[in-house]
Length: 151
Image (cartoon, rainbow, N blue to C red):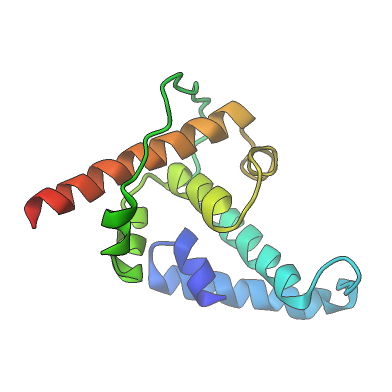
């Protein structure tokens, strides 16, 4: 759960706080767990993600403004360049993204949320969620290209 939380919270100390808060919620709400609806891991993962998002909202880290999606094509990232990166390097690149863009990227790409679910979680439109995903891909491509050219 700590690794999951570190994808959303940059600072390790804050991530530890979020995980502790999430586990407190898990222990308090364990009676609500329904094995028919989800596995224990999935249920706990959802609590950790929601606790991380709540923490970022309290810090006003999630942007409230509406973004208009670009009409340009999604930027592609060279799979060969990605295969050369370690997990820590990739996580470091993701952490360089602006907070809301990073959250949308993690929720969509890593955790498999739909744009509709992300829009609800982050209180934005689906179009804004799509814009942030496109922007994350664009920024990551630039970062990867800069790394490639410096080696």
